[in-house]
Structure formats: structure tokens, C-alpha cells
Image (cartoon, rainbow, N blue to C red):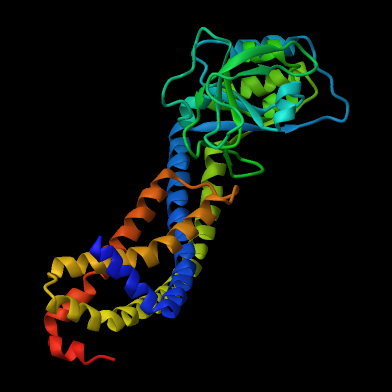
Length: 375
């Protein structure tokens, strides 16, 4: 308690300099949190890209005709392909025409079937019930729904079904696209894991959207071409297979180059601001050396002085770190991987712990009488 009281006296004695330092550190901490988060985010994207590369995924370009014609054989072809056991594929569709309940909530909803959850590790707790037609998982940032709440699935043009929320998606759950957004985060979305037949029972089938979002995993080229030929025989759609894994690899290179440019800018600004903040901190420490020397003469140990200094630095350094991190969390378009929290916390603690050693080193190397003569 005494060390806490002494630390507050140190702050009040140098209040103007402390406020200046805290402002400078808040600026540096903002850049630090963004920098660390970008590194973690880049690593998270690389992990997902590597998983996709291992799967050898093929998707399709779908050319929509001016006059659409779908023959009865289309339904049989899709059912044979998407309901057959042993066919490795996945589909993810953002549902439109939601039930009135979901429309009022305004939460995006995705249906995933096939091996969608396995490819992107979206259900690590194995919550999906194979005997139930639908398993509902909500994003980690959704607050107006909770596990156990019942939501109504189905579109307004078809029948509906009430399904309880089975659990939450992992933090920063996401999947990759070959068009539009390179990576789609699900923290503020609902994901429904289902099968093609269950999805078809409660929704009008949008064949074009289904084909656009269909991904074959590890299929032989002849089988892919046979499926594409079957689609063109059963409709006026034109479909062109393309290497999804290769497209993702190309997008990852663009993402890497953009990230490297951001890292360079953030690093330069952070180094400059950090250098100024460290210089300011050392100046504050120098101002307190006389008080520390007096404290030692009155019987304080180096451990007491270290604790006093540690509390002093923590009080002036933790709020700027917390402010920078809070601003990062408040940005809905800046997903924060869980590893970032631990790394930023670790860096803050390490910085404070090392900085508190400086006065001890100075007092051990210098004559106490010299410190007492400081103005």
C-alpha cells in the first residue's frame, strides 16, 4: 500500500510530463495493436489458404443465359451429385428471402452443406447432429441471440421450421471465396449446417446460386467435366470449371503484398513514436531518482523501489495500451484473432517489467549523494 501511495505522489509531482507521455504512448499503442493484429490476421489467413491448397478444390464460373430453361433432369442430377455418399464437395449459400424473425434481426445467414465445416474447421466441438435436418451456429460477436434460443428457418416463399441454436462458431470463423471478398468472416452471422435435401425442402432452389457456390474436393477431371456437361444438357446454363485452389493462391499473394506494405508503414511509425515515448519515459525516471534515493536512505530495499516503479509505470502505461486495444475491438471490420490478445498483453507486461528495472540499475551504479543533489 505504501508503494502505491508513493507511486501516485510520483505521478502528481510530474503531472504535465506524465499526461504528455500517456498521450504519446496511446498513439504508439494504437499502432502496436494494429500491427500485432495484422500479423496474427495474416497468419490466420495463411492457415486457411494452406488448408484449401491441401484439398484440391474446383469450383465453377456460371454463365446465366438471357432466357433460362431448366429441364426436369436437373433436379435428379443435383440430387445424385449432392446427396450421394462418398461425393466430396461443399456448398455455402447466403440465404435471401429470410423468415420474418431473421429479417427483423438483420443478421446474415449462410447455409453450408457437404464438407463445408470440415474444410474451414467451423465446428470443432462437433455440435452438428447428423439426425437433425439443421444445426444452427451463431457468430462469436452476436449478442441478440444465445445458445438455446429458437430461430425460424426457411424462406417466405416456402415452409418454415423452428430450430434451436446449438452453439457458437469459433472466434474469427471464416471461409474463402474466389469472387467478391477474398475472406468472409462469420463473427456477426448465422451458419446453418445441413444437407442438400434438407435445404431444398425448406427453400426454393436457386440453381444458379447453387452452382456458383458449389465446390468439388479432389474430384477427377473426367468426373468434373461429366457433371458440367450434365448441367448444360439439363439447362441453358453454361458452366466452366476452374481451379479454386489456384485462384485462392493468387489472391493470397496479393493479400501478402498488401500486408507487407502495411507492415512497413506501421513499423516505421511505431519505431519513431516508440523512440519518442521511451525517451520521455527515461526523462520521467530521471526526475524521480532523487525521490528514490531518499526512499533508500529511509530503509527501502531495491525490491521496494522496484515495486514502486512498477506500479508507477503500470498506472501511466496500461491505460494507453487499453485504449489502443479497445479502439481496435470497436472496429467491426477489423477482426481480432484470439492470439492477438495474448501477444499484446504479453508485450505490455514485458515493457512495464523491463522499464521498471531502469531506476534500480541507475541507483546501483551511481552515488546516492549525487542523486540527492538533483533538482
